[in-house]
Each structure stands twice: as C-alpha cells, then as structure tokens.
Image (cartoon, rainbow, N blue to C red):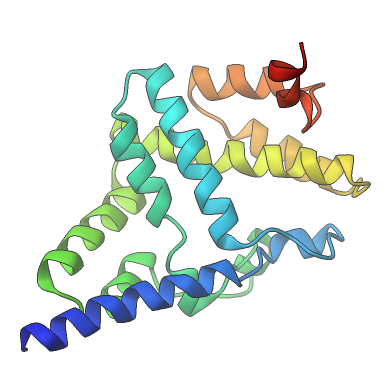
Length: 191
C-alpha cells in the first residue's frame, strides 16, 4: 500500500470514530431516558475517571485513560448492545471488529490500537481492572444524573453497576457519590 493509501486508511478510522459522537447509549432507553448520552460522551468521562482511579490505585493513568478511550470504539459497527440485548444476540468480538476497522490504516496505527483493545478485552493487569471499574463508575454516575432528571428506573442500573466495582478506590468514590448531586462540583468556586 502507498503512503497516501495508508494515510487515507488511518483518516478513515478517525472519521469513523466521529460516528460515536452521534451514537446514543441504547441501554438507557430501556429505563426510559429519551435522549441518552452518546458513546463518545460516555467514553470521554470514562477516560477521565480511569485516569483518576489509576492515580488512586497506583496504576499508570495514561495507560488506563488510553484503554478507556478505545473501550467502546467498536460500537460504530455493532451498535451499543445493552446487557438485556446480549442475552439474545451474539456479536463479533471487539478485537475482531477493531481489526476490520483498522484494515486499511497505517500498520503502526493498526498495531497500536489493536494492542490497546486486545489488552482491555483480555488483560488482567491493574490497568485493565481499573479501566473496567472506570466504565462501571461512569455508568453509575450517569445513572445518578438520570435519577436527578426524574428517571426513577435508573436506580437499578446505579445499584447493579456499583455492585460490580472491584477496586477500593472505585468503591470509595461510589460511596462518596451517594447523596451528592451533579451540581455539587460548583461548590468549589461558590465558597
């Protein structure tokens, strides 16, 4: 492949990632949320949470943020399949979807991103554990925000994602979040 073709293949992947800014997280529709967050919005906060959790757990914050950034990129091709849907559907493995997404990308890009996705899906390092907790904690916080907006059915999602947290830091942050509102952060400058 020519350098120009590889550059276009890499840009094609970047353009595909733009679709995540429009792709809604469909699991929230099950609890009645009419306009749920996008996959990109979820992934951004998951990466931030992941970096924070990594700092607290003594893991590599940059690596965790990277794992979190790419954890749902396959949803451009297979959609956001909620847990209830997974009971009835068999989707391609995220590693396989990623390989297809990167088929025309520069080899350095394809190899790098594939390694990140493979590690997130199959690894057992502290960074992987923290990245998975970041995904769960983000879902819990999002559910709490939907509860504030009147979506009472979100409580079950808050409880179930909280129960799956593994690291002490994620559990401590979940405990701290209980009883807080999404606007509590403003108190840092309103004092």
